[in-house]
Length: 393
Image (cartoon, rainbow, N blue to C red; front, side, top):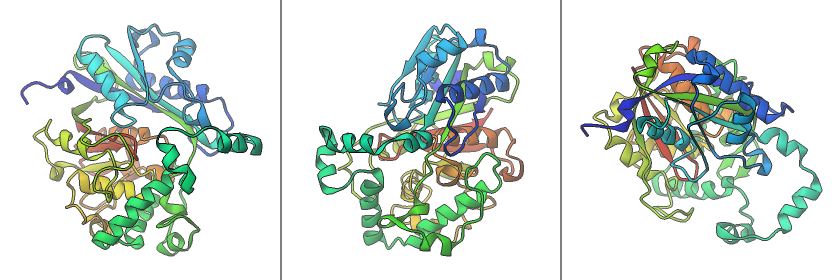
């Protein structure tokens, strides 16, 4: 491609709030903390921000979102020329893609993109009565085909794909465990991670089962927290404080119907199109990637992204991660260098974006990947997936 909208924008600021289990603080405050940190990182004032974008908007169910556009606008008192939020995006970081499109089109110069969740505190506050009401409420949409069979959670749904992958390709629990153990090792180097104690294969295999083949450590960690990034016009990025990060390419395509019951049933659904379209927007190849920050709502999500993005052939993901040496910090493809959602906490993919920028700016400290110049981020765990390729400017 000769001209891409990605060439017109840069990521100029990143920030995050406290991240933890059951913080018990106002989630809007967490969102504002992350936004202020991102502005300070970029050296921008509130008056400079003329766009806001967020995933998924002000959805309050079970703490899935802690703040929307109206909350941040009201507290920060910015007056955006453009704003946007929603959840029908290509991955949770689709809000960043929308922001980049707006900046490239001249609708804004500096867009604040944020994601907030307080699932951990919200779950703690739920009462038995509330659980009873939700269980007896009317069931519609895809849930009418799942809940009657006891499949209430993505842990149940994605476990089915993992089981079939194991049956077809010989993938093992120990291979999935290598992803969880690697994430914990990296989290031990990340002061902001929730779980930092070492994890052994014995710990992994002996943990209680959640939904076969997933045990406790195959599942990500609900938490409270917020992340924000700033997308700026390329020419405006010259005046910001830190080294900008380039958006090399995005992947957003849908190639299968919007449902959990599609594809080959042995890969993460609604991710294949994003992976395919990403590589068509760049001359770079999987071999050029120095750091991979891949969505790990469950270990199998991460393994499936490795295959779909072309880091190994379909069916070979288990053998690629086996033993953990290839995906270690000093391996051929350092994976989820901050600890991922399995150990650092579930911020719906936004900590992956934050960490990729940290790595490309060389600010990773004792978890820094040497000479990192290209990073890939994927988001989506059953919802439509998205992928973003980032490079040093």
